[in-house]
Length: 309
Image (tube, rainbow, N blue to C red; front, side, top):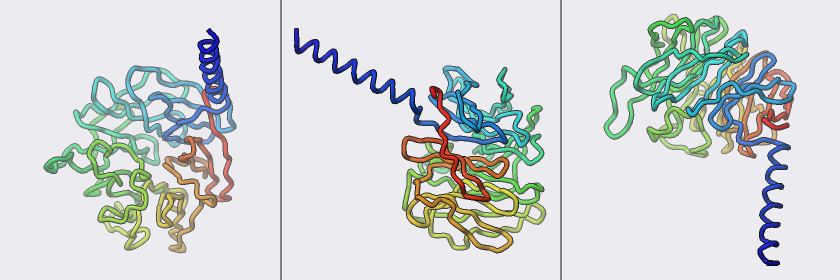
C-alpha cells in the first residue's frame, strides 16, 4: 500500500502545484488589443477584457465556437472580432460591456478582423473573396471594410493585403502585403514567429499607400527581413521586424524617414496588435504575458492581465 499512497501523494502535489501556478499568473493570453482604459485578449478560444491597471478579467464570450482577433473601436465602446461558428469564419462586433454579438459578414470563406476605420463606422477585415485560387492553395487575401450597421462590404484598393492600418485622417494606409507563413491553413493567423529568420522570396517591406492617387512607398525600401503588423500612431508607423534576427517592435518616423527599434531586451515579440492613447500591446514567447509599451517613452508596463489574479 505504501507505494500506492506515495504515488497518489505525488500526483496530488503536482496538481496543487499547477493550480497554484495558474492562480498566480494565467498564461497563453493571445492577440491583445488596447483601448484608453481596457485590454481585450483571447484565452481558451474566448474573448476577455480587463482594466489596463490590472485586476480580474471579465469574459465577453462563452461559446463552443472559437473567437479571436479582438480589436477595439476608436472610442473603445465596441470590439470587433473573428469567430468561427458552424465551420464558417466571419466578422462580429460586441459592446465592450457585453451583450449579444452582431454578425457583419456572411461569405463562405474566411473573413478575419484587422481593425477599424478612423471614424469607427466600419471594420477592416481580410478576405480571399473575389480573388482567383492558386492551384493547391487558397487564393490571396485583400482588405475590405464593412459597416457596423450592416451593409455590403467594400474592397480597399490594394491589389494584395494581409493586414493594414489607416492614418488618422484616413487618407493613407500602411499595410502588409503577404502573410509570413505560406501554408493556406495559416493565412488567417498573424504569427510572424513561425518563420523567424526567414530570408526567402516572401520577405517584405511595410507599404504605405496614398488612397487619393494610389502611389506607394516602402518602409524600409528593399527590405530583406520579415516586416509585419503595421500600426499608425501620429506620424509614426510601428511594425514588427526580425531585421536583427529577433522579432522586435520598430518605429518608423515619416517626418525624418528614420526607424528605431523600441524593444530593448529582445523579448521575441509574437504580435503587436493595437494602439490607443499612444500605447501598444505586445505578447511574448515567454508564456505569452501581455505587456503595454508607451509609444512615446518606451516604458514597459509589464502587466499580465489574468483570469485568476
